[in-house]
Amino acid sequence: MTEQFPSYRGQMEYVCLGCGARYPIDELLYTCPSCGGVFLLEDTTFETLKDHDGGYWRTLFDERASTRNTALRGIFRFYELMAPVLEQEDILYLGEGNTPIVDGAPELQKFLGVSFAFKNDGQNPSASFKDRGMACAYSYLRALVRKHGWDEVLTICASTGDTSAAAALYGAYVGHPIKTAVLLPEGKVTPQQLSQPLGSGATVLEIPGVFDDCMKVVELLAERYRVALLNSKNSWRILGQESYAYEVAQWFNWDLSGKALFVPVGNAGNITAVMSGLIKLHRLGIISELPRLFGVQSEHADPVWRYYSTPASMRKYEPVQVRPSVAQAAMIGNPVSFPRVRTLVDVYESAGGTFGVVQVTEQEIMDATIAANRHGHIACTQGGECLAGLIRARELGLIASDEKAVLDSTAHALKFIGFQNMYFTNTFPQEYEITPDAALANTPVSVMSAAEKAQLSAEEFTGRAAKAVADRLKLAGK
Ligand code: F0G
Image (cartoon, rainbow, N blue to C red; front, top):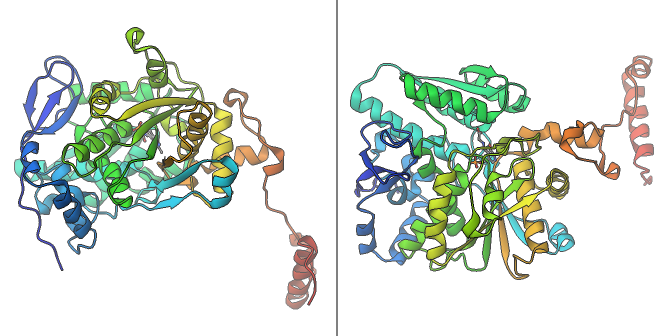
């Protein structure tokens, strides 16, 4: 049955986390015009959703899981909780969301002595979780274009690779009047990630430096020129990414007691969204208990860990200078969404949830990534970072033995495959501080040279090659 599009419409406003000022959503704002603070979007009629109990919402969202209405198939299945101001005609659906949660391979769970599952967000259309936020941000942009009748809109973002891939993909799909440009730190985006905006036809610009440098440039551009900024400073992105939390809750039948969620932290948009989504579920009684939430950072890019590992009375936020990291997509020294995290952690904790950040080494990230993927997972290095974070949390006594961890593998393993290659060939530049386990090195083995093949007839070749393979594998005859 094609489900009717929901009739509920909220009233959304930008709320500045710096000075509390509120602004209407009829234009795209990124920072507060009066104090420069970051925004969160708030539905001021959210409380009226409480007219229905948690059970009503659980049933509704479960029923929508089988809808044939494309506007509700992806992240907008949770329409009322996210951006309930969009019309059906504006909603974009490229197959994002509904990513699987795959239990940790039994052998690996046993070996590590921890219970966990990966949520494979790399199985989104552009192979990362960014598609969730981009589907929402572009849907809103389409609504604006329709309302204002704009005939040219240039979107821009700074990126460690995945935001640009998602922005370019959705921009290309929407087409006129959207044009997409992305700004990347030269040499600090993997070749696979770089190929994505190029393939989607975006204008790809590079500057020397790291992500933090690119971010400053696009912020200045957004201040001075008519561009639509698609970084997570754009709060519509955060709303879309909340769908991750809704999906985790739904997967576990809306019971998150005894669960611990691990999320890699870079620009801190994702952890903001996950926390915000969980808070909404809890406020509406859709879940009765908040799970434990952990951010994970590499010691090469750890400003959020530094903040939260300091006793509360002495905390002072300071950006850090990043060093090369295999969790390259999260290699960010001055996360734009840090003020959002700080605000939401207070709300989360006062609602009974616990929040923590763990720090891991580059060696641990890489070892965990390799271990996961040798056990049939498709974890990117940020997913491996989550597994390393879980192991660390266990060591620190932060996880109970009967607790189950849900690890966010934020992108597909193939996007970061160059790091696996460096591991197998022992070619990490020294700054990474990674020594591969030589026993795990895996490289292709040639069983016959081209020159040898050239000497043989087609039949001889098949026979010889089969014999060479059988010898290599020490196969027994039958
Ligand atoms: N994992 C992946 C695969 C990412 O691409 C990112 C961020 C993160 C984790 C960290 O998430 O920034 O929300 O805390 N990538 C951004 C980008 C910065 O430009 O693609 P975050």
